[in-house]
Length: 115
Image (cartoon, rainbow, N blue to C red):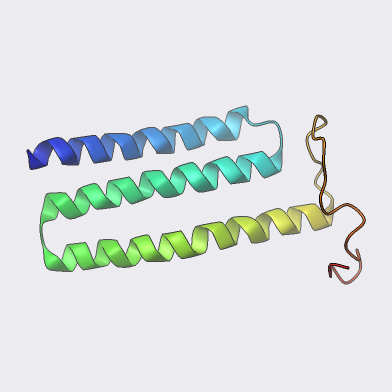
């Protein structure tokens, strides 16, 4: 029964990573690409790590998997936010069909501080 869960989790993780790769190609602008890849790749890597913890059944491997999961869950959203913010500040264009820009005219372009 354990082998079933290992295969299921690792296959689902690989599928989410594949979807992240497809998202890079299919999304129309930079900001959507960052969003899709961050979410899907984080989930995919997390599922593969959990599968490896089940596969090895060792305390040292499981503790490393948990540490890596916490690190990824804390750093991936922050990194994506900072990359998106830097892209917005340097003027990377939004998709032409974007209806709302929440930051437009709300920050100083010289100091990059919100009003």
